[in-house]
Length: 202
Image (cartoon, rainbow, N blue to C red; front, side, top):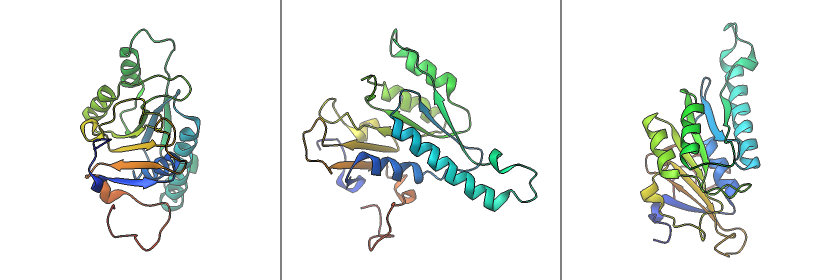
């Protein structure tokens, strides 16, 4: 109840980094897809996105480039960073910037709940609504949200929501969670395969 989630939709993790990696790698990025995030997003998440795109590009290169006439570098998904000009005049600036910069072939958009480098609280409801209108999956990096902002992930209804508990909830290190919408749970793939693999989301 504390984060507005059913226990069947939420798993505990050692940190947000683990959850973000799981979410990005579970989206099935393919040739022609874009992964969109903002330039004010967390640096390590940008690296995760680029690494996931590179892995998908290698897979596409190995599987489909023979005889295609396309160089390997032209294959695979791309990472697109939308620019946010600071200071903002209003949160409308963020929504307008995302609407203008997000490519039509975007598969996944990643947004911070609270940006680490600028402490900007993003208008998540509006951004998620925009993505829904365009058929784009949404991953929320909420590492700094619990304990600072009200959290109701079921009402917010992204596809993935990842948060740390050791920051503003003052929980011990090694406590984080990943919430996944029921529609996306069949697509989630763990980073480490063990006995529970294939037994469902939780």
